[in-house]
Length: 372
Image (cartoon, rainbow, N blue to C red; front, side, top):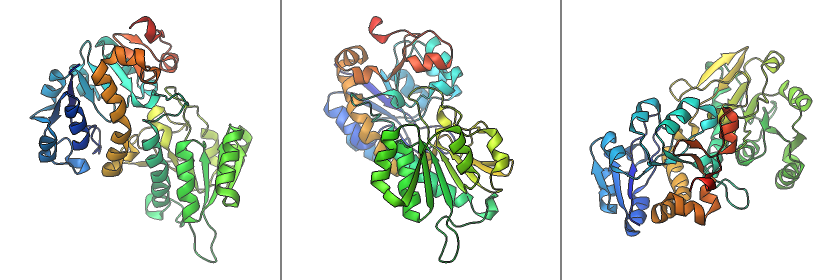
């Protein structure tokens, strides 16, 4: 089948990523689809309008016209409130949604009867999350880079160098969660020479991390007593906990703050799913940090947006394959052929079709297979 595919400029604070690259456009066009791009959509990631036109896209002056023209909208971040007016019955929205932390958006998608496919819940047969993984890799690596910066005194940090120098102590880095974010944070922290402790509830995962990093890290089972003990000496804490589609458990508790060092830094990478800290609240790249009981909190909801060129290429390398399947077959047929694509559908024509999202908002879950 032939489908009209759209991509608009992201309007979230300091979000410079774009949902389609010119190479992606060429792939959709080669498959017989029409692609409509808002003028300037790719500039923040280093892609010019000319490149999109040469790839076969039609340039549109404003976002509203793109939304109204297309069968499937491909984005990066969740729509903001000013974009809810563009929701309409049958529109396929293919992007990050993070609905467990955003009831208002979920309600708007349900009211608009949008077919909403969320990158973060699409799960492969091996239980991996292929559309979340590239951004988790970037956010994990970036978390150490940002944490090291905010340990500087001028930002309210302790004023210590993560790696130290000969004759001085290295910083203590604590990573809560050993998934993709935690692994990538660990790589950078170890590479910079910090003392690293990583906690996870999965013993098999801890064994894998231990085999990978050996004596360079300390692995611990993630229990409340272990977390509280290691946080007392922590200089930088990375929150990297994820349950696909669900609200994040609050492992970093408010009561720990008074026991921590003044000027310690907490980077909550899980903030777009509600955060894993009781004292976490979403911040922006304009104002990334705030201080609570002496601890610097960094809770930017779109961390990879700080490195949009790398992020866009990494993300679209992963999303293109599934997007082409949806465009070729239509969403319903694509879901019938592939349980992987079906796992990404969070809302369908006014119904919640992801169990964890429904649970997060005490809503009614409906099996997608009964609707298509």
